[in-house]
Length: 245
Image (cartoon, rainbow, N blue to C red; front, top):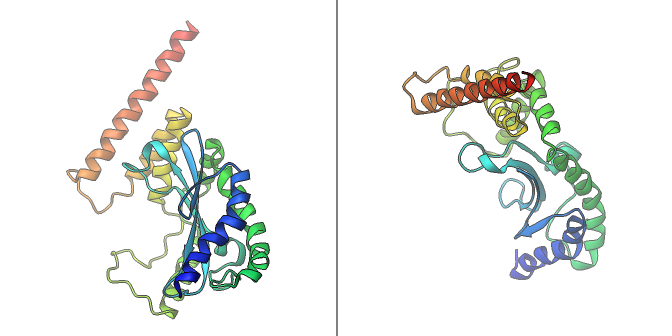
C-alpha cells in the first residue's frame, strides 16, 4: 500500500464518517470515536486488517464502564460491525484501498450499518439496559459454543494457530457461568445502587475460581470485594429501616 493510500484512508473517514458520528455526539481520537454518558463510554474503532483479512476494514464496537475500566474491567460489550451486519469479516463489502471517485459508493454501503451499530452500542449507555443484556449473557449458551467452534474453524482456515490452550479449551460450556459477564454485571449493578444484584453476580463470579486456591491473590481480592458488597447491602438495608421508623 502506497503512502498516498495510507493518507487517503483518514481523509475518507474525515469526509464521510466523522460528520455522521459527530451528529450523534461522538468525539474523536485518531480512528476511534467515543461517546460518554455518565460512567459508560461507547467506542467505535476503525480497524484495517493487514494479515488474514488484508484489504478489509471494519468497525469494532465496544462499551466500557469507566470507573472500573483500567483497574478491574476491560471492555464489557464488544462486537465487530462486519459480523453483526454480514456474519463475518470476509462477507462485508468494506475494502481498502478505494480510489476517491468511489468513496461515496463505499460510504453508502458503510454508513447505514454504522448508524445501526452505533445505536446498538449506545443503547448500553443506559445502565439498566446494559444490566439486562449482561443478565442474558450470564451463562454460556449452546450458540456460544457453536460460535466458538466456527471461530476456531475460521482461524484454522487462514493459518492462525494457538500457542497455548487452557485445560478446558474447546470443551462445551453451555450452561456454565461466564466469568467476564458476571464480573461486569456486578460492577454494573453497583453503579445502579443495586447491592443485592451486585452481590449475587459476584457470588457467581467466585464460583468460577475452580483452579485457584484460597490464598491466590485474585481469590483474596474477589473475597475482599464480596465483604465490601455485603457491607454496602447491610448499610442500605439499615438505612431503609431507619427511614421507615
